[in-house]
Figure 1 (cartoon, one colour):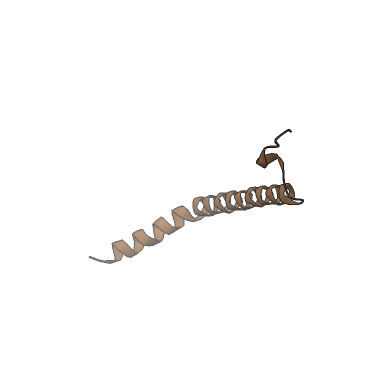
Figure 2: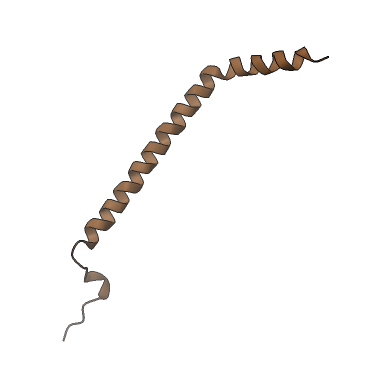
Length: 62
């Protein structure tokens, strides 16, 4: 009698669910990366203006 390891016996759809969960994680990671890139780009573009703004406020006080 041959014993089949438990992990090789899968319920129908179980592997598909695991693939979909992996794909969802990759999609969320891609979205997070794009948001990070957009944030860095935005901060780089307006960074000097923000620094100048706060410097003007700081210099307004004696």
